[in-house]
Length: 193
Ligand SMILES: O=P(O)(O)OC[C@H]1O[C@H](OP(=O)(O)OP(=O)(O)O)[C@H](O)[C@@H]1O
Ligand SMILES: O=C(O)c1cc(=O)[nH]c(=O)[nH]1
Ligand SMILES: [Mg+2]
Image 1 (cartoon, rainbow, N blue to C red):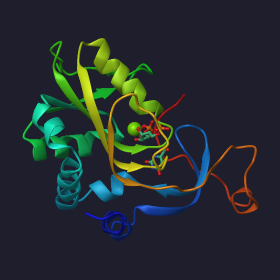
Image 2 (image 1 turned 45 degrees about the vertical axis):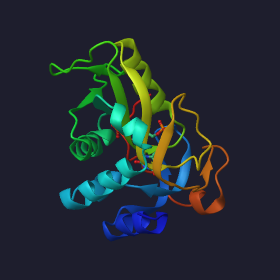
Image 3 (image 1 turned 60 degrees about the vertical axis):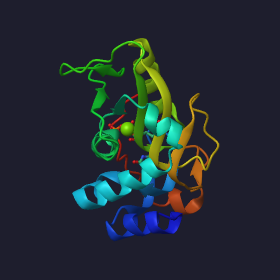
Image 4 (image 1 turned 30 degrees about the vertical axis):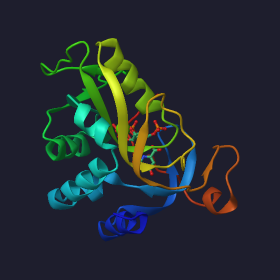
């Protein structure tokens, strides 16, 4: 899929939003990719996951033992990437604020892990999820995401293969442009800190 094909899926799903958004990092943006909307259709989610898997070099694809994703945003796309790779997909969650495996999920030390995210902006969620996997003895051999909002700037410490890279402007809360200053902000994500 080309970048335009991927963005067309977001548009068709009503997932390319404009307004005033507080991102999980606390930074502000006039644009938001509501991945949950693009993934609410199973056929579309599967198609995007297969395109993400195509982004992986063959030697990485062959090496993957297990797919791991950080809930909530990574959950559905992680499951679909697992299906496309014919590998199990488990998820990390953070009921106490830091990512952990629950629900009987486990990583065997030495297992090669593909991390799957919906969106990467600053990369904080991804880095925290990678840390949690490494703490269990997993080896993260790469990450895929539907969208890289850093337009290639982010460093996750592992090879990163986003389906699409976008450079929407992002602002500090105390340096908003007038068009954002004029409208109330909403915070669509679930990270608290
Ligand atoms: O690269 P970053 O700056 O970390 O931002 C991207 C992260 O923010 C969103 O999740 P959020 O933390 O809001 O939680 P959610 O997945 O539970 O909605 C999104 O799903 C990514 O995980
Ligand atoms: O940075 C984020 O939190 C973020 C940006 C975005 O466009 N979409 C999303 O789901 N999260
Ligand atoms: Mg998330």
